[in-house]
Length: 286
Image 1 (cartoon, rainbow, N blue to C red):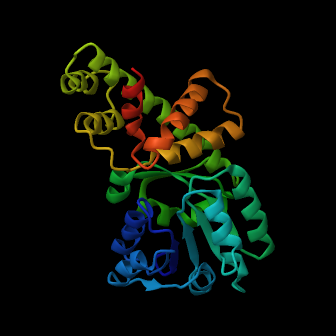
Image 2 (image 1 turned 90 degrees about the vertical axis):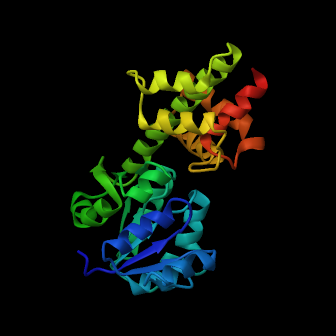
């Protein structure tokens, strides 16, 4: 598998450490990023640089895409110099972005027409897990395709699991992120309530972390609240995007819909900060 070359598109907060994991494990990488400076940093690590997605797909066996949203996917695949504008044939394209199931199914149809194989494989985890290569990869693909690329996926994460055909990975990821949003909202409300009652938030966090409620997420985001550190590992505006996608495919439960409204209200001021900056928004209305 390591004899196959890999093209990586999207070197943002998550894509950067994920691509790094492939290089560290001996894969030959070609990268493309709209911000050329981010791509040049990988050139120093031995990666080649492509000037367009079209050029990239022609040079590699497997293409991995990690970008923000449906619009970015349309640009990467169907833009003037997009993946599907190349005369390349028979490539494997892995879309690890958190996007709609609908766009994955659409891109799968276009890829199939051109002789490519497509799968959606979004990840569960944040920057820490990306740096440690302990992400969970949630895939939608034909079984044979999933098995053929599983060694690559397991270089990026600690577990790769297939949930069904194309689009299934995106659906499961939106379930996961709905739960994530609810947890972040609940933690932020608990911390605001602690302030209301003049309870020390650090001591409350000790209770939470040592109780049945404890989790790595509660620990990391609780410490972020206590330290007032809202630098984006996963931005508040991105959870708004994901909850809207979840609503589009049927999210109609009270806590999920309330969380969406809460994050939408907060996004104008705190959208570029971390998801747990919802704490700051809640403080203003408490």
